[in-house]
Amino acid sequence: MELQSRLDEIEGRGLGLVSILYDPPETIKAFTDARDIEFPVLSDQGSEVIRRYDLLNRETDPGSRVFGIPYPGTFILDSAGRVTERFFEQRYQERFTVSSLLTRLAAPATGAARDATLIETDHLEALSYASDFVVAPGNRFSLLVDVTPKAGMHVYVPGDHTYQVIRLRLNTPEFVQSHDTNYPAAESYHFEPLDETVPVYTEPFRIVQEITIPMSREIAALASAPDARLTIEGTLEYQACDDEICYLPVDVPVSWDFEWRALVRD
Image (cartoon, rainbow, N blue to C red; front, side, top):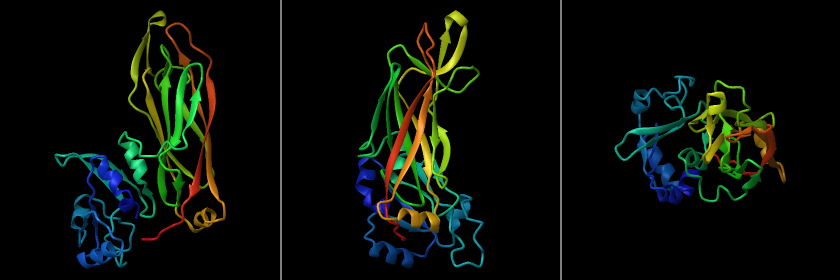
């Protein structure tokens, strides 16, 4: 299990880890003993907590032996027990990777930038990398671009204006699913000569693009082919301005290269 293999890293970030399953205690004990799982795994027999949080998977046949399973997900709680983040998927076969969750918590995982690519233009510097560099069918992971505008420069965020906004545009293989791009909150910039206020970034910021590789027999066969790799290409688009000049829009090619990991069915 990825959670157990990354437990030291998770705890090193000051996080605890508890898993809740719908299985009876004896089934969970056999499972955790067989896999040397060291974090608590709790039994929600009868799916009482799952139902209370309205997480019961209603697509499962009530007569099925797996009826009672929840939609797969992760809650992040603070020290007071308050939920601060939640990450959920519709299909139990598809899960956020540990590194992608840590990335969403504003801290890239150890080694995540191993294959990072530095981009530098006249207006900004950017570091492109991924939360994971080895992926498997069923993984939901993140492509990241850490952008630092150069002194005096700003780039634009979507809003009520006609400037070219900064955008990560991907050209993905057909079987890859792209989710909505995540941008941080923008700043307000007032351009005095035109008396206009627009949303921009002047300080370093991060673009996060989440990707899911669906679970299917066809994709699993593709991933298991000898020397198979996954490459995702794209373009970082933006228009930069300073206090006097708006420069021409720029398109910068970006790409990410991944190894495939063999499927492990827990």
